[in-house]
Length: 272
Image (cartoon, rainbow, N blue to C red):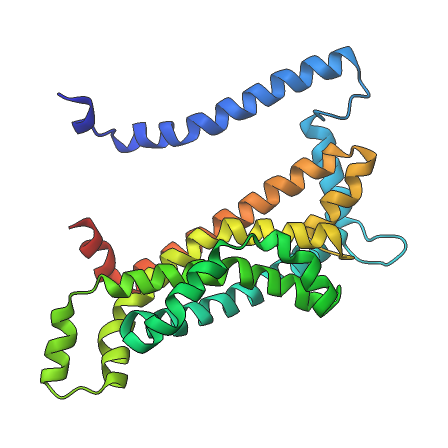
């Protein structure tokens, strides 16, 4: 049997999924043990016990100065900024992407403009945003929206453009108005694709958020990472990075679940 036709059993599939994670953990544990054996005070590769203790202190012991549980305050601050920004970016992508994809006038007006804006490096705009909007929440949210929305708009417009033109012609033949075509023909087919676009934007969104928090913030996961780096506190940095990765993975899984439950036809259509 050719290799491309060989499918693993469920047990083999689970083992293959776990293997890279186990190998990564094993490599880290070996090198950490070697460095700590040579220098017990080494900070570059802390032991799992040191990382657990650092997280326990931040998550379950109130800060003596503020009384806050720093780990959860940072998590809430980052997630709030992320969700607000991605909500705005998704709304813009849905409205503008549908308009560009369906209406020739809007395509002529905005297609090239959005294409150019999507090529601008968002992090290069961060100083401008800080000057124009200040160092508060608005500039951080704006950075994520600017970084994600244009790409999502272009993706959605392209997906609309891939819809068979016969659908629009038949709807017009049956007397549908432009608004009805948008709502009943294009929109239902674009919503699951919008979720795909949002999933792909999660990684860049976290990047922009961490960059903004590192430069100007007093809370957030990115802020904390760059605050403790001056002390070489890898026992805090590594768990924070792992936590960010877990939050992104859970968000992606939640979006996949919503897509599968709300649009069961989409997975079948894509498989075919």
